Figure 1 (cartoon, rainbow, N blue to C red):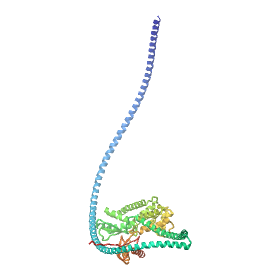
Figure 2 (figure 1 turned 90 degrees about the vertical axis):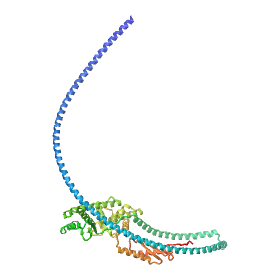
Figure 3 (figure 1 turned 120 degrees about the vertical axis):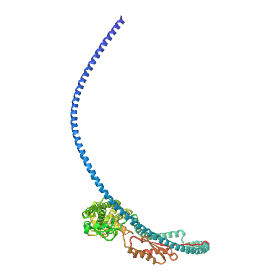
Figure 4 (figure 1 turned 180 degrees about the vertical axis):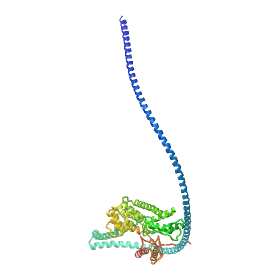
Length: 577
């Protein structure tokens, strides 16, 4: 019964649980249905909103399509106009190309004619140069043969002298052997006599050898002090002479380390023409072209009988270069008339100004100067066409700055300041034809005006002693200027003076006793003196070199220095029998 009751209770519980579960499931389904219904209503509202927005977008798209169709019609009209314009431009380009080709053909023919003329001239010059070289080589061969014969003769004489000397040396060797034995015996006798003399002196003086040595040391000490004072005086004198020699070495080293190219220029420029017919076009009808050219450029144009060349003369080098470029452009263009001359003159003037500015920039970079007033840089560029005794002034300034910098480095001074002083020392030469006065004072005023330091201004105004130099910068500026202008080859001298100087140098050396031959070499910067060895010994050769150098210094004026070399040859000849 209990089991049956329990079973009934279990069944009843299961039934109740099933009903409860079923009711719970129905409740959940109802909740899910309500939630789905709400979501459906929200989706319908969103769809309605999207439909409204889509209709608005369709209306906007229709409006934009209409505007696009209008723009396409306008673009089509512009394209048709562009095609017409392109056809017109293409036809004009064809016509211009034909004109350019015709001008290019004419220019090519003119250039070819110039090249043929230049090649013919170059060939003639090369043939003449080869002929002259061949003649010089033949003469040199003959001179060398003569020198070889002379050397062989001297060699034979020297061999005979050496043979005689060898015989004398053998006799002297025998005599010396006997004398050596005699001297050995005499030295032994002298040692014995000296010992006896020392004992006798100790007995007479009453002094031992140690006491006598002390007195001797005292006397030697006083004598040593006197000799030391004399030695100090000699050392001081030697130091003074060595300082002067050292200064000379510094200057020479500075000059040798600067090897700049020098260009000799004059007041006349030559322009080569393609043909003599161009002279008539340059002159023009009744001379109107040449008058217009001279009045516009300020350069005198000289047309003479010189074939295929005209001369331009002007003392202002910048103006002369502008005139030369103007005429060169006119000749190349072929159109020469007054209006065209004025146009080309302005173009050439601008080009020369650019060249001057570029030259100034290159010089400043070469020297290492960056901070300089633009007006000073412009004036430096004008010195590109200025010369002094045939030496280009701008290159002279660069060379002077390098020499001054090297000397300042050797002396441990302020290198940038001294290079700046040397580089700007001739800046006044850019205005000497416009402003009256010395270029040193003009340059000092310019430097002071454009903010240069007082050391630089003083070095500029004192480099020709118009103002007494007061600073080391001024002294080194003077020295470097003299080195650059006075070194051999820097400046021109007349051929007549050059030949006379060489002749006088050879005459001075040839007039000395014992001189056999004299050769002036390296454009007179070195002279070699060949002496007869039987008349002049080694000491006499040194004395002869000093005498020749001293006489040259007293009698001649020359740039730089002249080296005197005395050659004394000793030749030995021996016969193999």
